[in-house]
Image (cartoon, rainbow, N blue to C red):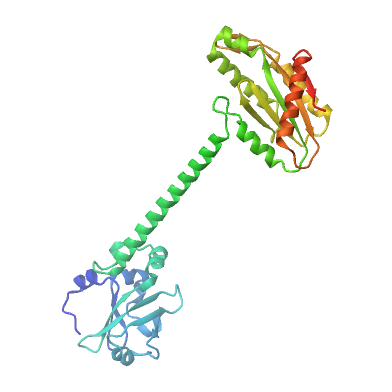
Length: 317
């Protein structure tokens, strides 16, 4: 057919078309194809620039004219290997107008060649496909963000369930999990509570007592190694897990540092607090521990320390 449309209007409606003359020379390219092929494409022989992949056997204009109306698959020779799909329509002068598109490769083409909506005809289904791809990308991104938020909320909830609200230390459940995670490894366990804590509460008030527990938590953590676990078990009672600590002398030195530090005055907003601590210690040489037995042994050693005058540490036998 001989298009009656003016060139500008045809370019707007079909920005990816080619017009070939009767001998197969490219006489005009739509603005999108002209940008992709470069200005040197005009005047080139179409069959030297492209291979017709389907239908097979088309190597000159007679074959292309005979295939008018059929679906064509083209590949650019060399260079970037541009692949296109389309149809040929015969004009009145023995030439052909090729209406072309990227087919299913449009998303990759947009990414590789930096195309925008303006590079496609207003009725081109590629525009709708691009909108769908963009919508799918937006939904996928939103799901990814939602998944990250849910995972962060899950981690936060798990941490909260294992953490003492007042001090930020592990709570009873957090310590139980830490002990279970030791498996058959050797470790030392310390149980301690604060001497004269009730007097601080009575003299300075419960708010000062809470502030004191928070400061004790900070001081205990400052004495620990990386990998040690400090837990507040309730009230003024604390438990400390020391992995890989096997010798009485080692755990004794840690206990002595804690006793010395907590025997010094602690300054609070409400006033100065003077406390101390007693410690019961257990050495677990390895193998699966009976947690209840370990805690009972540490508790018994703690009471023995208190019975001996407080401010001291006793190792369970």
